[in-house]
Amino acid sequence: MLSRRNFLTAAVGVAAAGGLAACAKEDEGSSGSDSSSGGGKKITLGFAQVGSESGWRTANTKSVKEAAKEAGYNLKFSDAQQKQENQISAIRSYIAQKVNVIAFSPVVVTGWDAVLKEAKTAKIPVILTDRSIETSDDSLYVSFIGSDFIDEGRRAAKMLEKVLEKAGHKGAVKIAQLEGTTGAAPAIERAKGFKEIMDAEHKDDWKVVVSQTGDFTRAGGKQVMAAFLQSNPDINVLYAHNDDMALGAIQSIEAAGKKPGKDILIVSVDGVKDGFVAMSEGKINGIVECNPLLGPQLMDLVKKVNDGETVERRIKTKEGDFLQEQAKEALPTRKY
Ligand code: GZL
Image (cartoon, rainbow, N blue to C red; front, side):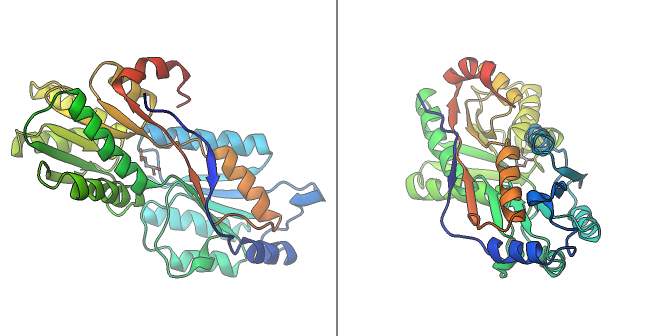
């Protein structure tokens, strides 16, 4: 029985938050005043969301909005429809509106330095949520709260070992990989973690025969899986970087007259309710959980940053792993 652990651990280090937020705190007015601590005025948070591409994202948006309301913050929220230029525009508009804090989930890892330098110049602290960025300038954000995607990839590979054993699989393991959005941290890192285990422990018997992005959507998963089955009809495992792509792929697998969860064993990531339903129906064999309910921890972080407190540079969410036999039992208590 795989246990479920769901708690926040603060990783090492202290961010530049104190300095940056202290500047914001000291330099009142530059970021629309900071009378939030004691002055009675609401904290204004600008949040630039990736989009609404998956069940995970829907749950994440709900968590952010509900937690901001609960915290009494003035939330400015934007949906970038998975386009980086929209997220950059949203961040620029938050800077122009002189919000107290900016938080966002970067759709891809590169291309953020310019706009984050503008936020730094405006003395508005930035928090990364869910996904991180590649930058040589650590001062561009004060903290990153989200999952460890490389670890999720490793866990998916270790889960596949259990799924293959349980299925009594014999012979070659021919894996199709549905990748997340090209250039996104979860796509890059879930592939990396999975490959690490495959190279170390399954060099001779596992092979990724085909791999392509489905952009984290059901439609993408369905379309790409149909093409996979045309080009590689002997696929016997699917590793999907999220449940929505796995659910789309299941439609194509069934349309091809094959049984998902049996003819093609499926391991996925996220743990949204529809993924658990598919698992309870025997169509998905295992799911690595990725917790979207970051809202409450984010709002705590926003308050600390706005009040000039030092905060952890990296806050990792811990999650569980679920095999088929746990799906039915877990379903009633799933929160997303
Ligand atoms: C992961 C998150 C990913 C989910 C997808 O933290 O960024 O984006 O796994 C979502 O479902 O689209």
